[in-house]
Length: 341
Ligand SMILES: *Cc1c(COP(=O)(O)O)cnc(C)c1O
Ligand code: SF4
Image 1 (tube, protein in one colour):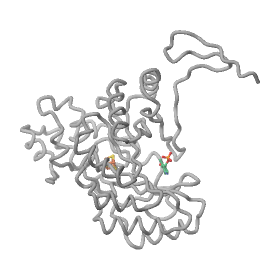
Image 2: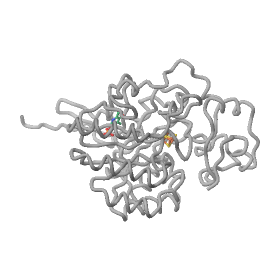
Image 3: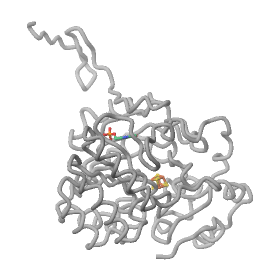
Image 4: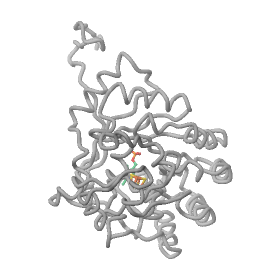
């Protein structure tokens, strides 16, 4: 796979010329993408293209200098380096700061902003994390994230997963990886089979647009599913990319059809350099409302905001009523519902 580390080269590959405004973004937020994902862009309409908007630098990234790089206060909730412990039963382990693509809307953009890059998890840090997990048996699940853990060589990835899986109190491992979407070949049969051999291992990926559900991406998910690994999807609601009920309906249907369960739809976090992607919470609620009569519950994710200051993920639902009277999901009549209590 050919990777591009300069926006100019990526644009040239599309037969386009980069603008000086775009290039000014790169010293702060560098470009990293590959032939596969570039190939999904429509060069004729690149300025409006949802794939381009996720991957090519945009001067709007530099417009917001007031927001925090870490509004969720992850850095404050690290009892040991690379390990975020916010909730009772689950933690996040940051395996690397590297990804197969630098998504322009990334909520953990600080992990790859120039001068702030998160290094790969070291042996010492892994030992620190394992020690913490061993001492805190209330933690039952580890999300191995980053960055993208599948950027690590297979041997290193395996060493990390094996070490975590060996902690007696750990019952579930959730691998957070965008590889099926941005570099499907990287989800090799070897990796899929290894994941399948680890009890309680789930895979959480990140599709945002139906055009990302290519035959290659479907095959990558298929390798995981066939190996016995449940796959879920966590999307971000992105202005100008996927903030449309019909489009998301198509995405979620396609995912269910390849046996990937839409798990979360997140509102954009107030992170520096990504706020131009925010839609407003109301938009997400409208989309969920539109889904109710039209889309199978298997295909509907939980819409959530991740509260600043480490307040946690809050699931939001459209309101249908209370106190014994509700609107029907077609929003045509009011219906009484007495519980008899
Ligand atoms: C999102 C997140 C989790 C996982 O939460 P779920 O709702 O189970 O997906 C765990 N720890 C941290 C710090 C998180 O941000
Ligand atoms: S793959 Fe995930 S962690 Fe990596 S840049 Fe994209 S959104 Fe961020």
